[in-house]
Amino acid sequence: MPYSKKLLDHYEHPRNVGTLDAERKDVGTGMVGAPACGDVMRLQIQVNDKTGVIEDAKFKTYGCGSAIASSSLVTEWVKGKTLSEAEALKNSQIAEELALPPVKIHCSILAEDAVKAAIADYRSKQSSKNAKA
Ligand code: FES
Ligand code: FES
Image (cartoon, rainbow, N blue to C red; front, top):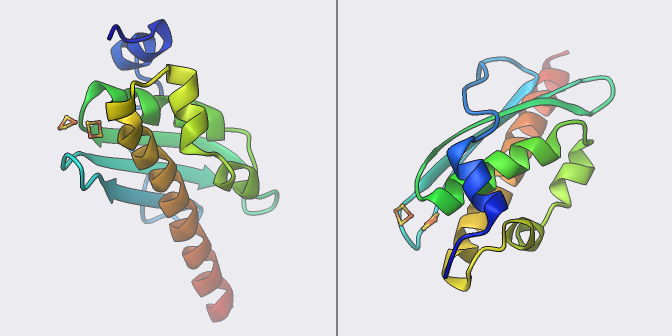
């Protein structure tokens, strides 16, 4: 089955590859692995504390082309979104946008899980900050 143009584009020109400073209070880091294949994805978001809007996102993925394309796509999608909007993103939207074949659906689940893990990390940092204040 041939891969879609969008998938190949994100695979060949991944957006937002890189690292944000995980020590920063306004950065949330999500690190997830796919049990199906052992691939690993790290996704980070930088959030505006006042507005709750995601201002930057970066990823690094050790994995297949579909996992790289899925993480590239979600970093584009979450930028400019609020945390709750980003949380509502579904792996099925990623799979549809990239026209992932059925055996690659779990790669999009990895991306959804990575976003959720990054948001959870950001929230736990915020609540520990507030607890100290
Ligand atoms: Fe390892 Fe996806 S199975 S690259
Ligand atoms: Fe496992 Fe893509 S993340 S094959």
